[in-house]
Image 1 (cartoon, one colour):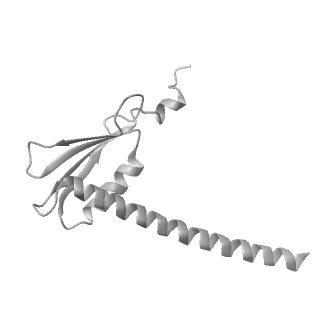
Image 2: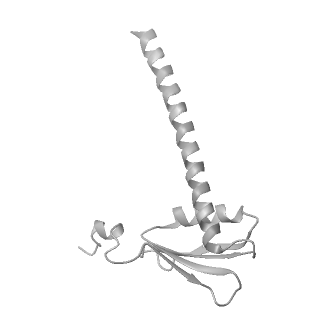
Image 3: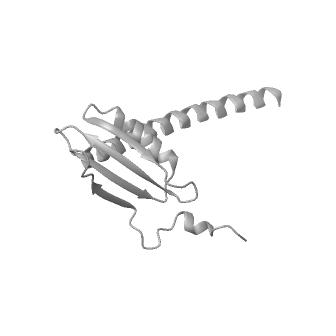
Length: 123
């Protein structure tokens, strides 16, 4: 078959998960390569970075759709390093996703309670 093995999509096989390099073209900028991730994480991270007033630029690209990695470029003001901005953005995303999970579970439980109530009426 002409399909890569499924484990290759998640197993790093000797690659570092994150590579951090300073960008020599711009002041206070960095290029971060994240392996075995796709647009989902890249877009969330870039959008979260753009909400930070210390971030001047945040963007990403996926070099090839069959390679599961992305390159994130971040430029910040002098108040903060790109690395710190990324860490703060990741923490904010985790908090936000936890809130979504809690809200979803609450709504799901309410839905299940109402469905059980309807089933009891028709029994």
